[in-house]
Amino acid sequence: MSLLGRWVGRAIGVDVHRGFCVIAICEEGVVRSAGRVSSTPEGIEAFAESLLPSDRVALEVTGSAWELARILEPRVDRVVVVSPDDTGIVQARAKTDRLDARALARLLWAGELESVWVPDERCRVLRRRLARRQQLVHARTRSKNEIHAVLQRRLRGRPPCSDLFGVKGRRWLSGLELPLEERESIDAAIRHIEFLDWEIREVEQLIAHQALSWPEIHRLMTVPGVNLICAATFIAAVGEVNRFMTSRKLVAYLGLDPKVRQSGEAPARSGRISKRGSATARWALVEAAWQAARQPGPLHAFYQRTRARRGHGKAIVATARKLAVLFWCMLTRAEDYAHQQPSLTKRKLRQLELTAGAPKHARSTVGALSRNETLRQAERQIAEQAETSYLRMVKDQQAAAPTRKAGASVTLERA
Image (tube, rainbow, N blue to C red; front, side):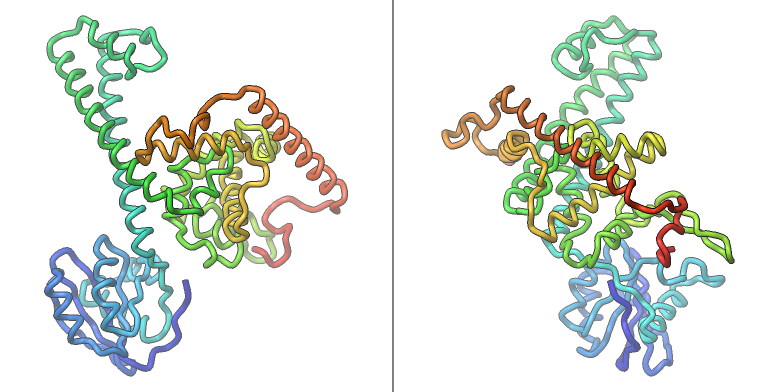
């Protein structure tokens, strides 16, 4: 993201709606309205033909913003897609479509707009597939909750199996004596769950097939606790990680950085995380942090040390932030996780191939999913040694560091 300097040519502001777009033009600091165009491919193509190669166009992020940008980009100097939170239009006293377009044109001409990162086609496809999978999983969860609600209404106890929706659980559900309307609800929910299971498998196969040719996803999966969905969600949200100069910028982009408040002579205070980035990426990192905290290694030691001081909830979020920093280091240095467990990594990569549709009994992969308990125990012992080494390093650093105050003001000029 970068702030644009003052533009000497024409600056075009476009306020996008589902049926039409309102246009405004700023030239040499003078803003004028230019009417409406239809929000159809034909209407946008006709509008693009009327623009000059030296023009710049600004529009806010909407559902159709990326398609509009794709059509306009070949005809103009640059298309700037901005976040509505960064324009100040939402807080305006008077807000109309005409005024919004004029404000975009004026800000673009003055060079005060900050462009968001535009994902490439590969990231867009991965984002769409992951979003579709998330919607399917949420729908399946609603159907499962409906069955649990029926059992609660009819005072049915816990099922005699761990998985209510497995083979034994469904057999138990089919044998229950329930009123006709409740039986109809359970049968309909089971049919819906079976359909959604099939759809989820299909979209996961597409995601896995795309991930097979993505080395960055393979690299992130070398971290214990990071599966295909977590790695793919992170890559889809971030894209090219080299565009972040430091890990701090990546953490801020994902909304895992704490808010800071300071006024007058009072010291700065840090608060909750900003949550300004992708909510899906934060969710994936938190889910991976839950799993990484259960595996022996430095991440487990970091979680335990933070939980002793701040509690479980903050420790999980801090571990998610640590994972984001770890991902940045791995991707920028093109290195796998130093404390990975090779048999676990091999198992996850083989599962990725199977999800993508590879044959289960290929001769080249015999034994890839076998469980060698002796090897696994040896790897866990090595991970425990790495955890002990990490704790010793932290203890030595704390002993050598001078006494400092706690809070956001401990690092000068950071707040």
